[in-house]
Image 1 (cartoon, rainbow, N blue to C red):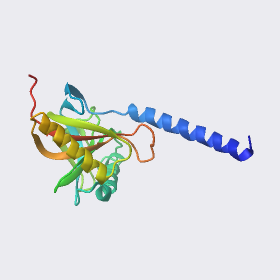
Image 2: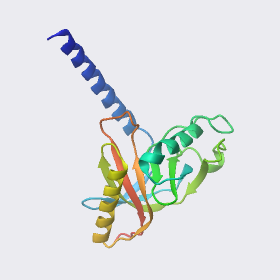
Image 3: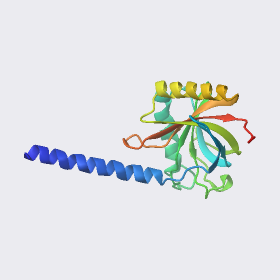
Image 4: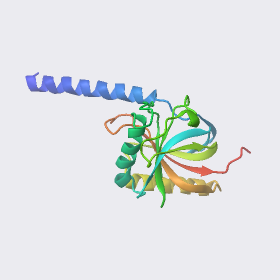
Length: 198
């Protein structure tokens, strides 16, 4: 084995191990509590508990155009950009509501009630209490972009139509991984539905 191929092999192993470690860490980040009400072949119905989110409105519903700015705005809040200079743990997923009035939200850790969270320094960040809701959710892998989000949103709507389920409100994109994570990427498309167990 030549020196260059040896170093290439070592670098590859280090990169692979770092990606596996990152995937492991991501899988252990706090996520919202939900129950799977029903699993279909291509999607599932989930009942989510109430949750508190830090939310910012965005001028565009295009993922590639708005996601970075929305992420930075809310990340500043949880990294100490608040009246108490308090750092708040990052959770997963980051939620982007798609539509004419789009928004991005970080779910606050379960330990924080809305009345105990520090006031944001930025007027662009709002703390919102979300009530329990039921969503239809479809998962896809890899890196997300506007084309993929549109494709899987249409797929979910087709699946709902086939099951005589009506969507309520806008589609939501849920992203679970940092951009530098390559392996084990997880994305979801979700939309609220009315669903009762037969």
